[in-house]
Length: 250
Image (cartoon, rainbow, N blue to C red; front, side, top):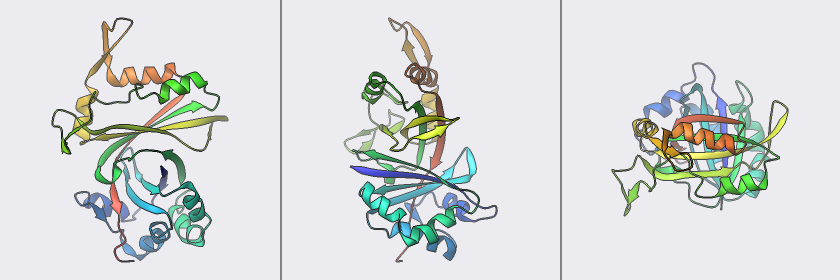
């Protein structure tokens, strides 16, 4: 069981961290620029229970970074948040522009993120009063995300006929969020594309709808309509190129 944290923070104008990440996307990992970022991230990377962290620019928000982290357990994550390194180094460094946003989730499967560069996260917000019937339908594996019918790999190799590496992974956020005064629960949906072009290629496809499936509509339109039919109130789509955080021998 993985405990995941998704931390989004804005960087000050002129900070070189974004350029450092984007210039090294061809590598498997990258060291942050300067001692300030190394000192800020050291408490995270060296925390007990920390498995791995990746970060990258939110393409729709060029001044904002997603820092994705896998933890051994929620207990280990909570201990990190109570540590001196968190309160005096890590969190202040991420809060220079404004307070970061954090979502956490439990997931029972391998998320494949350390091997994936380009991905989409679709965050779907449902009221906390979502009916049990709708929740069961959404949790059903047959409730598809944006993907083809098969996974994108054959015998460990990339299947050239598919446009993504893995089937999407969906998970409920552990904490409620307030939106316009209403308590909402976020469903975090990870999509693992081969690259931006294969995503665009997939979104040009259609899916059958209607009682006998005699009508075709764009896959994204069908996906959004299906979410609304299950009481989804808001959907946020964000794209990333992620790379693993490396602090060298520290």
